[in-house]
Length: 140
Image (cartoon, rainbow, N blue to C red; front, side, top):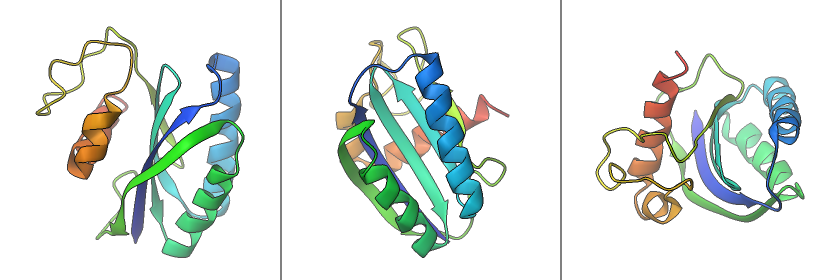
């Protein structure tokens, strides 16, 4: 198993219709390629985790890199993993608003704005993965 986590910025603010379209596309592509993962969106910012066979993950990521809805794509973690963290979802999704509390993760506990604290997440890949795993619990 292989995992890749990246951040990006939406080229324009996405309403519910645009997000639903993006999720449908992602879920279809991921299902076809046996990829699971999670997407988080907040105020034009994305953080996404993809997991599966390395070749398939990189294939999907290449599609994402050429998707005009994303800009400033930065991988901050990738590597082999023992098992999937999102086995039940071709693409779990969680939107975040300024009113949400982001788990009790060092560096994120005082987060109050409507934006993901991407600078903290990029500096610590473990923080990014912890955030995704914590937000996953809200979906179960």
